[in-house]
Amino acid sequence: MRSSFKLLRKKLSATPFPTRAAILSVLFLAVSIADVAYFLRVASARENAIVAENSLHIADGMPQLLGDELRIRQVLLNLLSNAVKFSDGQDIDVSIDQVGGQVRIVVADRGIGIARDDIAKLFTPFVQVGTDKDKRSHGTGLGLSISRELMALHQGTLELESEPGAGTRAILTFPKARTLPQ
Image 1 (cartoon, rainbow, N blue to C red):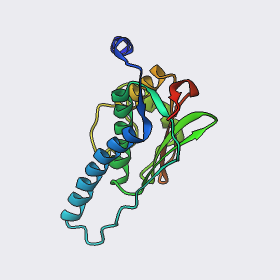
Image 2 (tube, rainbow, N blue to C red):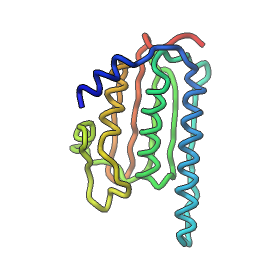
Image 3 (spheres, rainbow, N blue to C red):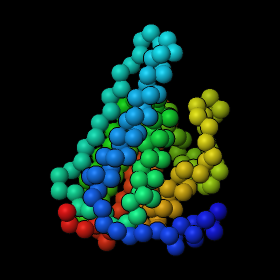
């Protein structure tokens, strides 16, 4: 696994790209995934289907990010995919803002949540947590570990905050050194 990350490190590009456009393109893809999931749930005869209430907030004047746009999109898509999977595509909030010169992207859901003791385990390759009942969608257990490594390659961080039954917040932070004026 580490050799794969070394290969990524060699191939990571560092070009400026507009934060807003990159985020929106990934969100449109994720919204399409959520819409399909919602349609399938409704079509599977749920009488009292709940309408999804998702939100997006992008602060004005967001700087460009300096990094590998493809890899950052990969991280965002993974986080949004997880939010859709573990919240049935409902009540997902995405916010992008600047805090102390850093760009912060938060993907929050009100899904099944994660026990505090299990959060650190999720960043270990091939590890999944929760009960079989919680694992609605099978995966490899690589998404969060790869995403965290990709953020580290951008000198950024990926942190999770969660509570069982209340949902999860995935927080990406890019340092000021990875931002450029609009």
